[in-house]
Length: 353
Image 1 (cartoon, rainbow, N blue to C red):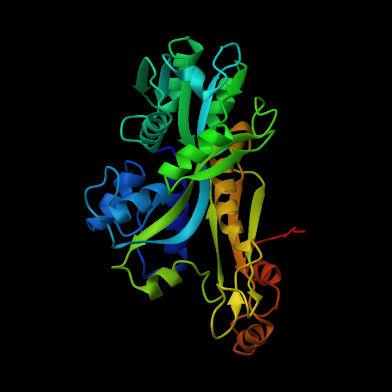
Image 2: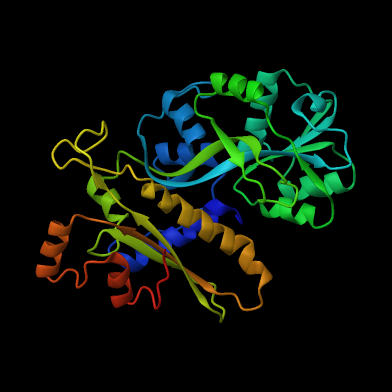
């Protein structure tokens, strides 16, 4: 319940309810990506979060999935999670091969961490003496007590549990070699090669190659395209904003992301009529701002005495002629998205590069 999905779900529900009074959205606690997709397919929920890995497998009905879930649809990128593999720095375990015959610990039974760990071990032929399935809090306590040799967890970075462990112990992050990564990705098309950047943790003294999984917001084809599009707008302008209200006094932090398009007629993904295409990389900022907000909400804000509120703002850049038509209709007052958001009171001050 305290994970990133639940935090983002509460934020997104508040945005929808505040912006569109005709829509009523509540948040349910799920059992992770696979459970969320099952609930969605069964009509028990209308929106959810999942990894692209779980979404792809369940859509195609491959691996352990016996049924195709072809009614699911992804509509918003969120943030990447990484399979983080770690041991204490004093341990002799420095590589994947060193895990052979040792005691390993992954996420709770049925979690992405547990499934990813077993899949990784099977592909690389690693057979630990024992594989425990426990939540990350229990996992790091067991590592402190020397009850396990290596831990594996699927989560975003920086992970609060890792930072907690590093507060008391020196940690070693175990990377995948290029050969290991190539072997894994050849067997798992919905997995990606990722990098935990140098400096993410105290123990990350250099970049660490790790398996990555993107998280996405999902719905089903039962929900109309108009409704889904409505859920990504901020009132009557392209973009969205929402608040993470902590209920405590303190400064207000605005996190701004931009979604621009370019006119590139010869781009293979451009619109055939307008030639617009999101090809400058700004579309990734939606995922960045949501991931940043989740990290602030769960980790960084817990270390300050005055708990601030957080604004999420996504702005979409649109062609000047269309902007002028919106201004003539009285829908917007300013050409610039940031200035317009300040005018509407969504932001008091905006700082950007």
